Image: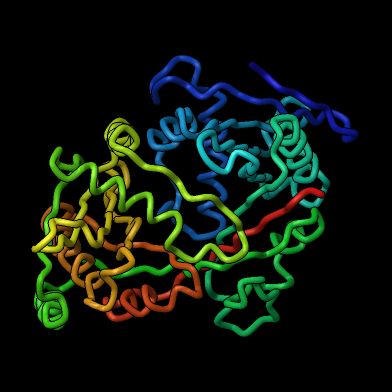
Length: 369
């Protein structure tokens, strides 16, 4: 299926492109152009590809799955690729929402092309019954540290530079800033003696809990309990006014995620805390590593379930997972993570581990009606 729209700007077209079945598929040329745009933007903004998905990862992600439909668009001006758009449509929960993203090549900005791409994806989302659009924009931390004027998030915590091009674009198109996340980076490897000291401190408050870990595939005897924890991740972290419904995770959804990671060349390390007397899983944390980008580890989800907080389990599972990562991925040089600015407890754990702010991400929303 292909959707197209020609704008008032002569020669501009916005067309949906196919996502190849595999990275080496014969029909991957358009998707390669999409990936090249994103890599060029990352290099322009950050000077590296640390925050950019690998080609294999992007292929498997944008194929979508039974939980979310994902669409990719290329914008061409007289046949030359000058921008892209994406549309994500949740299928299990949050079925009145859509995720949108727009990117225009640096040499073609401020000419209305981004507005045309956004109009195409928004129109398609409306056709699918979506009445709320979500968008994200990450940028380096330097302007915030320099004390520029900020647009405050509706959450009441954090803000983004008011004069930034991304801010102007979002506001012009009716989006409001709901939340800001801090992007933090930790130098790697983390000294073992330092981690042992943090672990010893955490153990003083975590009597009655044990830490278990696995690589890539959750053990069969833990997967049901692990799925319950992952369901909590969508309801127990700060989401400001974004109004998302909780995600329902079961064994099939966990296994689907694991299979997608594996086919994308992503290695994972998971640590969980388990209550000794009941066997209940109380906390978990996930690290991911890409073989095509060995220098960077991503700190993904970390959650301590209600009823188990106050025992320093967040620190305990993070420390143990970093100790394992020192052995699993010795070529890595950094760990990167994101946290909502209002999530002060998790940010404090990251600061204690040595994470330093390196960027921010504005989380925007537009509601129709």
